[in-house]
Image (spheres, rainbow, N blue to C red):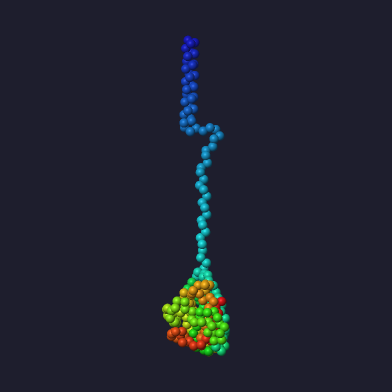
Length: 213
């Protein structure tokens, strides 16, 4: 009887050992964790790069700002006249804008041309050379194309001897060394009206000369 009890005790002990090992294996298989273990932190996405700055166009109340050169010219009297005045030439996207203001000249219309040489030394203005005509076109008024690049039409002078003219010479510029540049040339105001005739508009002598610089 005592022998039987010993065998039962041994069997129970073995069974408990097997159950303990089985439970441990099952626990590990189910993902059990050791005390104090921490779950891994979730992945943090990299910070997004700030968007690239967008270039903004420079504008004015009139529209996009134009960047260009501005040159001045001061008229000298020629051929015995008493003409005086100034010209401001500005490079724009459309061409060269000219703003002329003169006085001391007879009322009526007077031909205005850019001439090829920036030389007003001769008493009659002849040192300025011919009309500026880099593309060898025939002479014409500004409303006609083709024409000399330097053909600026006429300035109208009032009874007080004063006159103004604003005009844009398309295809011209003020870039140094450019074949179509007005820089370094001269503006001539003639004694008569430019009627558009050949070869230079029948505008007569040169009453005023200004070097564009």
